[in-house]
Image (cartoon, rainbow, N blue to C red; front, side):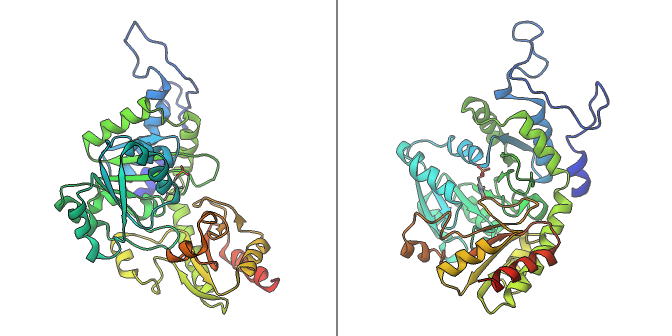
Length: 380
Ligand SMILES: *Cc1c(COP(=O)(O)O)cnc(C)c1O
């Protein structure tokens, strides 16, 4: 079955009892048992609910996975994976990982004796670090945030397996429509379903997909025992959003390409990055492992800090907000938002300059989005 069809039908069969085409949501914390210990398959929502199973079935299929476990947020999914580690375990992570993943290692799990080191895994010359450091897990994202670096998933998976360890890929930015890390050799594909998978910026969720029975058991345990379960209603919303993932992603990509061309034509930009634009330094690698470039475009404006802040404030269609992957366009200025607490010199060392702006291009008409940027620049 093709992706677009599976996103609508797998796990989403009409209700057996009533024929309701949209399966109902069971807003219940607990389930009546037939006799002590004998259930109809569910006992308590922290350890399972039909909405978790339906969403999990769709996501497993789309990620080309045997198993998918859903969680209350992307960070709950991250927490679920890290909670399986033990004191003394080490992680090798790509140096450009999501800020809150960095924070949970640094401020929560470090206290429990789990160590992490950051390596530039976009450079194959650094692969031997994996063998040297003997990590319990290698952790990458591709494309990365906000620099949109592409990491060679297949090559890093091979390097990890040769070193006797496993690879986790945070697939949030690409979504399963454009990239399937497990098919490229990764052991775990994790996503924040808050972003493209739900796509409507109205709830949070996370998922861990794998072909390993062992990892699946650990994830089911984490869902119920660590209390990382989602809400049944949020799963119902995410299942609804997921049905249009294919059409949304095609439009995100079409708009992002137009915005990239437009931004590159401006005198006010020094560099514009989009993984599926021939100007991206890793365009060939992006095409090797992805089917499309998603909806994030990063631009470096050659304007002073105050002017960049003014430009962003002048926009009407791009809301200034954290998050990404929704149908509506958003804009983020890492230097004054997500990375504001990091000293300027440190920030710039990882590429977060004052002029760097991240666009999460929505599915509005691209001409309207371009006009909005043009007007904002005119009014500086
Ligand atoms: C947003 C995000 C997360 C965390 O997801 P939440 O749903 O916000 O908890 C993890 N990884 C990446 C790459 C993200 O963009």
